[in-house]
Length: 369
Image 1 (cartoon, rainbow, N blue to C red):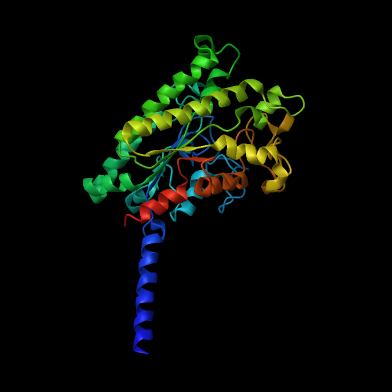
Image 2: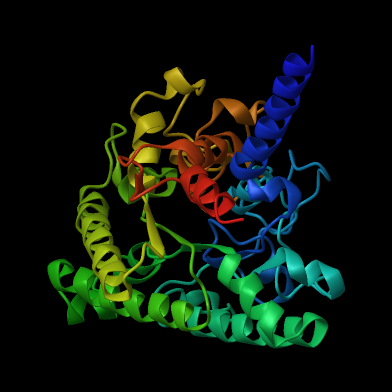
């Protein structure tokens, strides 16, 4: 009996230690989460700005728990919300929200602003938006605010351990290079020269983010730009994707991957993780019924061909079941599509996440504690 009792005790200790080592750190100690980018990840900063790039009116937010328009360009949750849930944290508040103060600052912040791009002249038609340099300045300001709360050293550690998501690039084509025929940038650069130019500018943004303390950064590519309802409405006769925009994303995404690999090599660490959102979209867009969608071409909410003209408004066509549509509006995935994307961010192979998925990052981190 004594031997049996001792063995049982050792077994209990072993199981306890194993759970300590391998349990995700997020469950016991949620990490901070910071978000930078455009409307795909904006959680409501533009609500506080005088701009047309807003999603603060119904039916945006129709499936959000509040059933109200929150500023997210979604029928419900967006990608940052769903990542927050998966890492065991509360959704980050928009940085411009007056509710972001005190202990809520320790959760992180969302600095994203609909309409922006890598370049400062992207989205000029939206006038008052938080462009990338200002988002980074706000991140610096955020750290000063948190330092006043918990001290400089703890703030540095909080940022170092945090997860960061950056989503930029799509607007530099849709709302810049191809915004109008013979745009300023298209006269200045051929597409083959424009892509390396914006990649080089993106690298400067990411290096600045690193200098500000970010060490675990998810960087998304562009989706299939020519296949969104807005582009189908303008360019498609029979549902075929817009060739020029497809060419743009086909040039952009591989060069982004190469830049991230080069930057990681310079830094000597896998700081920047490439997220192949084009492949993630292609999966459910090429075979929508396999994912429970009835269509990947027609937006749930909108007007005109493919419901792809303009944004979603109270006067728009609105589908009764948002889970059956891959696209919520002319540009943005539905909540269900966002969930599919986040599943791949969490668990996807190197086909989707390079060099590792988010679950692997969390597991490696948990082994350090």
